[in-house]
Structures are given as C-alpha cells and as structure tokens.
Length: 248
Image (cartoon, helix red, strand yellow):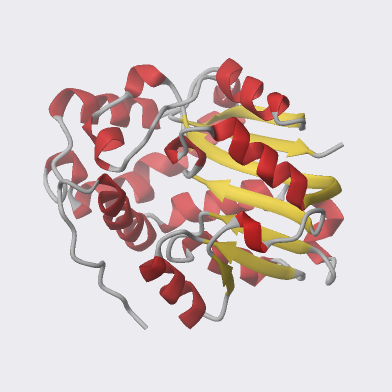
C-alpha cells in the first residue's frame, strides 16, 4: 500500500524529516541497501539465528526494516515516536513500540539505527538506554551524518541537532559503555554533494534536491562513492559515519 506523507509545515522541522524519509525510500534504493548490507555484515551468525531479536531504533516508515526482514532470520521489532509512521509500520506487519520503556532490559541481541541519533539532544543518555536493553554481547549498529562543516539548510530543515566527528561519535559510544568494533566514514563523494547543498541552499523538490538529482546520485554517483570507500575512503572522509559496537 502506498502512503502519502501527512500534511506538513515549514515551521515543523520534524515533519520535514518525514518528507525526506519518503524521498529517500522512493528515490535512493541503492543507498538504503548499502546501509543494510554494511550492518548485516557485522552481525555474523546472528543473521541466521531464529531466536535473535533485533530492534530498528527510529524506524520511520520501515524503509530499512523491510530490507532487514528479507535477510534476517530472527525477530525484528521497530521503534518509532511518530504515530503516523507507527501506523504504517503496523500495516506492514511490524511489531512496533513507541518508546524504549516498552522493551524490557537485556532482551535484545541487536539494535540498529540510521540517521536518527543526530536528532536526539542527549545522545549519550539515549545510547545508555539502548545499552541497557541489549544482552551482554549484543550489537549496536549506527549510521549518522558526519562533519559539522557540512551543516546546511537541509540539516536544519530535518531537525538535526548535530553532525558527528569521528572523535565525537567515539566519545558518545564509549561514554555509554560500548566497545567499538568498527568506526569509519561512508559515502566519500557525498561530501561534495552536501557542500553543494550548503552553498546553494536546500529547496525541496528543485535544483540539487529535485527527484532527478536524487535518482542521478543513487544510480551514478553513489556506486562510485561506495567503491572509493572500499579502496580506503572510509578512513579519510565521508558525509556519514558508520559504527559497529558491542555491549561487553
């Protein structure tokens, strides 16, 4: 079933983020598949364990959850604050909660999240709450925007609180008690694209933010960016950061 975004207002950054979620799902499938593949590559035997329990933290309309569900043999739960998006998740058959308070401590094997932590004022408190819900040995997988120097109108429009540096993200993860297993950049060519947004401004549906631009990026630029990441770009620069961590 196709869903239209709820009525939006430019004065409500959170709902601008909802709009952006729809755009990303519909126009950037390679980008989404790449994030999920990188996350699944970190969980080893848990991917095929029927008793493993994973949580999509900030699931939105289920873009990544549906990709996870196709590859993950265990039980997948979703967490989403927005009631409109909760309804979409439930229509897709996901076990959905609105708060970590609804999840008992020590019951999850995996928590993954994409482009969510940067919206939370007290990110360390959120990470500590996630830590408490994971079992010992449980995995945390995060994908977040990188480089505060890239801050643009788009970050403001979608309600970002920050973009992360590698040291800043490392500090937050370790302050919550996690052991970091992998931390690196993603989408090296995306830095140039984001600088263009910064310089030209973010105007939804036009210019660099047009549907055509998103499609061109996903089909032509992002595949090259992925190759550069694998050749070493992930150690140098990227518009996003990826981290895999473990609860000791």
